[in-house]
Length: 130
Image 1 (spheres, rainbow, N blue to C red):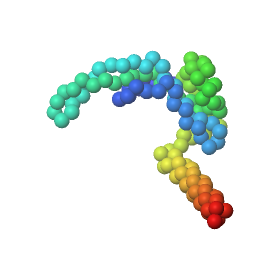
Image 2 (image 1 turned 180 degrees about the horizontal axis):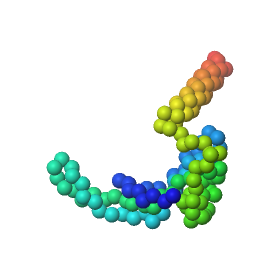
Image 3 (image 1 turned 60 degrees about the vertical axis):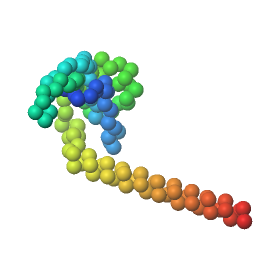
Image 4 (image 1 turned 120 degrees about the vertical axis):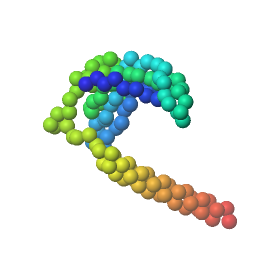
């Protein structure tokens, strides 16, 4: 399915979000165009710049490089893609937050291990100099 979406900033052509199962959520945009829009800000009418694009989404087992190698074919696949019974449901915000918290905790553990290893290395270097 193709959606016409608007953005406050110039959008990226491809948004590629890897998932833990090896697949990725992929948004592909084409026909990105700039336009002027009227907005009310504190009682004043302002003309602001916005962008619009045709956007298609899919979940697939592919790479960003493969998508970028043939954007038009990828856009056509995304436009025709439908979530099937064998596909996982899209992660809810809560599930995505939980996933990010788990990944953050793992990165924090790795950082702590690295810092401890560096401390041990510095201590051994100081002992060698004495």
